Structure formats: C-alpha cells, structure tokens
Length: 131
Ligand code: SF4
Image 1 (cartoon, rainbow, N blue to C red):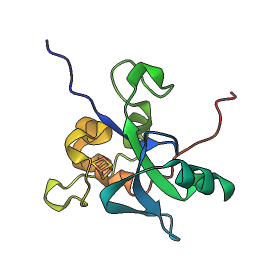
Image 2 (image 1 turned 180 degrees about the vertical axis):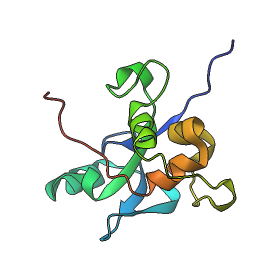
Image 3 (image 1 turned 90 degrees about the vertical axis):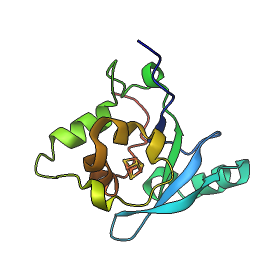
C-alpha cells in the first residue's frame, strides 16, 4: 500500500488558499476557467459582499478528507450521492470538458468522465453546518 497522492476538491469554499475554478452562468451551468486564479484577500472580501460567492463561482482547494464533513472515510460523499442519484448519466472519456485540475481532481478520480458531466451542473452548497 502506498499513500494516495493529494487530490483537489472541485467544490471548495471561497477562502484563503483556494483558486477560482469556474463561473456559474445564468443558465446555472458552470463554465470552467482555462487556468486557475489564486484567490487573494481582496477578491474574497469583495465576493462575500455580494452574497454567497459559492452560488456564483466554483472554487478548488486541497481535499482535506476527514477534515471535511462530506468525507465518507474513503471517498467524497458529494460525488457519491450525485452519481447515485443520476444513474442515467454516462461519462464520455472522449469528450471531456477542458479542466485544469483533472489529473488530481477528487471527483474525477472516483467517477471518471461521469463526474465531469455532473460537475458542470454543480453549485456548491456553502451553508453553515447547522443540522
Ligand atoms: S469533475 Fe471533471 S470537470 Fe469537474 S473539476 Fe473534476 S476533472 Fe474538472
């Protein structure tokens, strides 16, 4: 057994250390950026002034595994649920959206091309954990 290489979370919150991954468009699909934009303090502050940034953008950051309430112990529960609730969606490895984190993406490592299809419809749930 060797340690799994570090992965990136494709649905991170707007906070220090994260990078911009995509923009939520009017039709609620996500347009992925060609290159990462590391968030700076000014962006983070400004983005919060207009309401939840996660409703308008997608961010990527290190997958912190057991530090995240979505971690099941072996995988990301967010993509597990999305994948299970969309059984008819099939991945197409020949026609993947261009994405700069694919080689280390947590979701892609779990569900391959199917994750990429689903990913473009994901708006991050950013509410505080109060349940
Ligand atoms: S699921 Fe696919 S498209 Fe979405 S961030 Fe990961 S590699 Fe990119």
